[in-house]
Image (tube, rainbow, N blue to C red; front, side, top):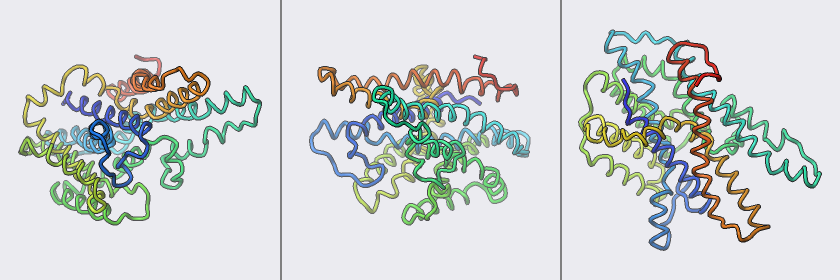
Length: 368
């Protein structure tokens, strides 16, 4: 079952995160991602903040879409055959080849960006240079094996990798969650996981990136997939999405409500998906070829955009010291550069493995 508008939503989510990180480079203090924020002065800055400063909510959309996409084939299989018959080996294999090749390539790209300028300085000035320290090899390894929970400093290596830690945990516990849902239904886990996220938002556990703190966001997508497969789509008012998203954004302006931003945002995006599935006009609008195209390589875009943006930002900063006439707005070329490089990453490190997964072949980088 191919839902093209899902690709579009992936592309929108990834683009929102890209523009948020560009905004964050321009206005590093004007973000509500880690704390409450005050309304900025000036109409233009306020408009820009609402356009770009909340782009990190694209992560919530990613989680919801991921839950839907992972569970939908399984749900379709269950309602057609009456049994899940989930092969853990096949599931793990498909998840690995879908997630890891592009991820590992992005680790290498991030390390290359980290060593580029120190290496150039070393070649000019002949100063001391340790490639393992400069490339932050310990963080490379922690991220490569998804051990950021044990080495939280490694989360600074690439600012989006923390979400992959959640995804891996979601996948690991998916078979258990599926068994619980088949035994007790989907409504009970939905309510329980919602309550857990609310509770942990108010009082987090000392374990960093603990999957139960965000599992509701993934599971609500899984719940939608089950409803689609059972031909019982959720009936929801069309205004539910903007209202819930508006409440999520409003949360960040007060310390009490700030912690509930994510659970509201994910519920809003679940409402958006439910609306799209119910109203074919929304489906058609989001299935425009250009939107779908960006969605196809959205995973690569998500992985490589931060080091690419930083490469441009640092380069222009260095050049501007010696050639002040060079306009700093050139750094915004990092945006189209990120999209271009992401598409190359997709061709080399995603597409061959996607085809192999689909056809049961051995992955090959030589195939296009």
